[in-house]
Length: 254
Figure 1 (cartoon, rainbow, N blue to C red):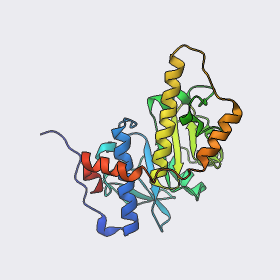
Figure 2: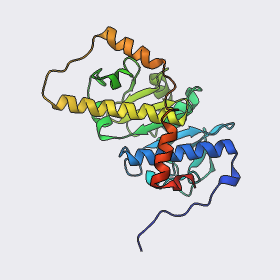
Figure 3: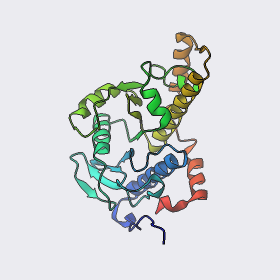
Figure 4: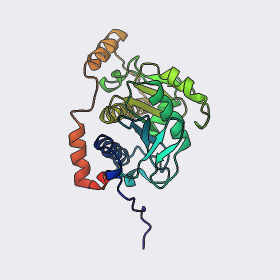
């Protein structure tokens, strides 16, 4: 018999309606990251606050993203105490990164961190994200950078990480990957989708061997300000993304 992920007993009756709704959205986020190929085996992590509690939800470290369900998510507080586990340990680098952003930015509800091929490639380029397209102009002067310090296991890095993020909702972790911070799960996903596409486009454009055409700084800033008016993102696309997942495999709701 093939090995399968262990069944996790539903925690639906152990949590509030508000927490359950967030669990379903965050589990959907994990499934979407897997669907679009942005996952990295059991590495990387997505989080969301628990409404009304000083805690957040994180993936159980050992499940693949396409196995995660609403019930399997781990509830953890900001002192690294597990309040409701999903049968697996917590990714400690994930705790460091997500506890930093969620504790340091009260306006942020959900955080995403990935190690995609394109994201890591851009993170290794000295000039960072370039204003090459309408998609990337969303992040013009609106993406932060954090220098690489090693695997994020040192809790002292949290202060520097949140300091570098500042008021931005997107950050490139140098020599590491991407991070987005949204006012909702859907916004964190949308920002990640646009940032990932911007990185992919930059790699494609640079590989063409031709001189690059970029808009003027004035046009770049004008376009970024136009995108600012659309914030927060995600609410329009999210219901359709959930319908997509329901057609594929609705077990994320378990």
